[in-house]
Image 1 (spheres, rainbow, N blue to C red):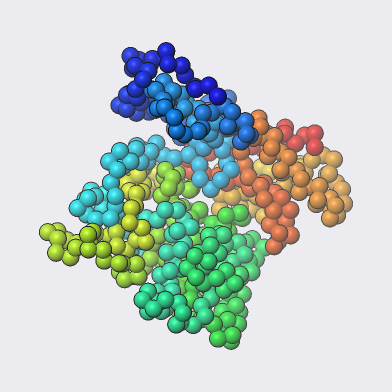
Image 2: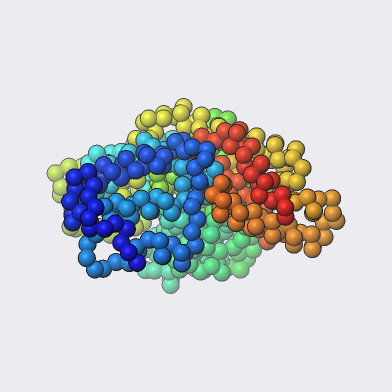
Amino acid sequence: MESPATDKNTTMGVENHQVNEELLLKQITELVINQRLLSGKTNAEDRVVNFVHPEDLKKLVHLSLGGNPLNHVQILELCKQAVEYSVKTNHPKFLNQLYHACDPVGLAGAWLSEALNTNLHTYEVAPFFMMVEYTVLAHLRSFFGWKDGDGIFAPGGSMANMYGMVLARFKKFPEVKTKGVGGIAELVAFTSQEGHYSIAKAAHWIGLGTDNLIIVASDSTGEMIPAELENKIVKALEQKKVPFFVNATAGTTVLGAYDPLEPLALVCQKYGVWLHVDAAWGGAAIVSKKYRSLMHGIDLVDSVAWNLHKMLGAPLQCSAFLTKHEDILHRCNSASATYLFQTDKFYDVSYDTGDKSVQCGRKIDAFKLWLMWKARGDQGLEEMVDNAFECAEYFSDQISQRSGFRLVLSKPNCTNVCFWYIPRRLRNCQESSEWWGEISKVAPTIKKRMVEKGSLMIGYQPLPHKNLVNFFRLVIPCLPPPTHEDMNFVIDEIERLGCDL
């Protein structure tokens, strides 16, 4: 395949045989701005994605490595191709995942921290950023009503959930750190049917085993049933097993359900079980006076995972693990490496937080959130969250009145809205198993059409444990700020794309 540019090319006076790093960085900044890759800067006519199948993409882009170095023009062209063939997550019609656009101020923080290339393990190498992380974690805990406690930024919500499971085990059996799992009782953990798959992965990774992760039933709205949790705990105790960890969810991945934290906490307190909350998606509700009641009882739990890069729009990745228990992270995870964590340093070594992490190298994820929060303030973030929830309610109201649409739930729990589109030929028919079989094909077909057109991206999925066939799941973010016009477009576009089915 031919290279993206010939050796005769030059750019702004740069000779073609070399890369001018400073100029390249400026050009990449201009590319981000000129291609409208910042939140809220997209034009209506811009495509969400220019979709190309994998084998075709291999032919369009010079992907292979090795050989001679490329020149400045060729490197810049590759960057432009990266933009051309990537999904525009900043587009208001990218409603496909639980992450969306990133805050431009947060992006500035991410760029600066990447340029400084600092490792967040000791105060001596990251003094400014270490203090930022302390400040951010304390502010996040304050929303849960915890005056004290601890926390750390983790590489994603899955790892933050794993922190919770590991700390729960350590609290119940501290000796597991030195003696391993062989000498302790058979442990069991609990999560709901709607819980994130990372809980099962954590059970595998820490040696618990997925057979010892007990699934608890949820109600029709997707909330874990406290009485069912207690029944499962009692049954495990009768089998001489040791319950140690319960995972609740604030904003489940599909239905957006908020588990009832207060009654779950009372069950966990009764049996001496650690209660962790996966608030990766729905945790943003806590910054809103209007919607924080969804997380009533959060002050009673032991730990929380919160992905600030999801609804709030901090740049990926920005995942906080928070616990009300002081010093447990250090006691559980420390290995006291003497080349990093000397106790006779010339400053207060309590600010050397790296030893409480399971990582050595750790990015400065807190800084981009801190800078963004400084620019928006509590009030600005609250307004963003309120707008996202209001748009979800608006969308739900609109499709409840529109022929051909049917809600999975009568009203949204979070900013997730789940619904079916029913083509004209299937309306007013007997809803047999064959009929539902036809309905299950609708969302995948419309999804294919919207991606190929580049006009919209929303997800779909079935929920087999609730006997629900494929339905659309619209997830509404804070950034770019959604509007009623955006919501109306989604409804109209699905009708346009599915009118002939």
